[in-house]
Length: 125
Image 1 (spheres, rainbow, N blue to C red):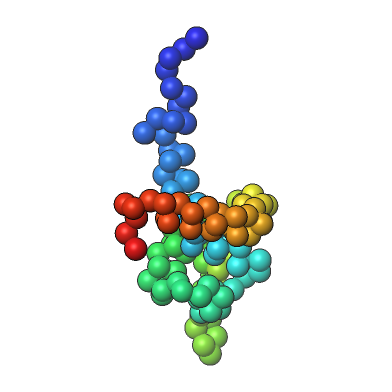
Image 2: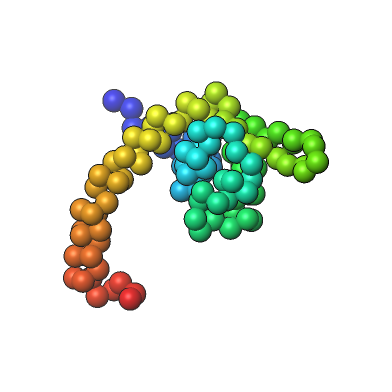
């Protein structure tokens, strides 16, 4: 039996960076919003609480990782439209499952958090 850790658990495994870049809340929510191509401001309106700066950074990160495309729209009003690539589309099913699980278990998790926080004196309130 090998005592060598699996490569996926090593600090230098590329999966860590990829997971960090696609599994944060804003990336996941943006990928869910892009059920069809949307302009920047339409995405921002759908995601209550996201700042323009964070949306810009997250879209750039998703574009760099091949999850979304960015298309400049010429016309009277210049615009930019974002759409999922086939790779980005392939994340919709797993992210939907995670979202559904979160919604289904949200009240139970909040009850556990409340119980934990009321019993743990080290929690800053």
